[in-house]
Image 1 (tube, rainbow over the protein chains, first blue to last red):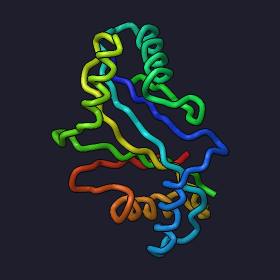
Image 2 (image 1 turned 135 degrees about the vertical axis):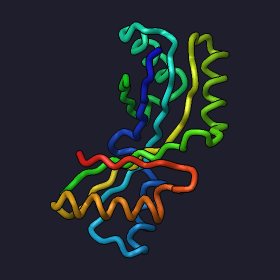
Image 3 (image 1 turned 90 degrees about the vertical axis):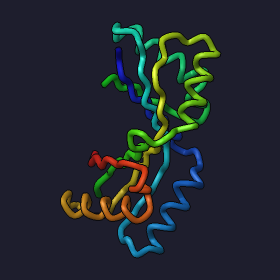
Image 4 (image 1 turned 90 degrees about the horizontal axis):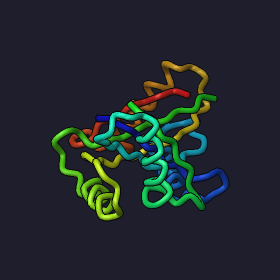
Length: 80
Length: 80
């Protein structure tokens, strides 16, 4: 069994209102020196295969089809 | 300036309906051998400080107060 973590983040230049809201909230809570905040998603998956290359390929396909919107999001795959 | 990534994930044993839905969707899309899927959040932050220990402490406080619900979520801080 292979465990994987997929991290999906907005591409640079894509507006991130959620991140902006967190940035504002942190500022108004008294945290100082906060620059940009951007929010993304993380998926922890278990795959029954034991072949790392096959797992990576399968994850790539999952990202393209379901987990990420590749028009506005980047994704990173990490096998654990 | 320090860049940091905070990853917030549900604690073990906490139900994750969103993860379950993704698990089901991947199965019905024809992906085989998918075990548990769990979804979390990731925050990319910029801090103006250059002191890694101070940054870590500040991030810890942000997680406790805003970024994570420590009753049901774990968080991990990574300085980049």
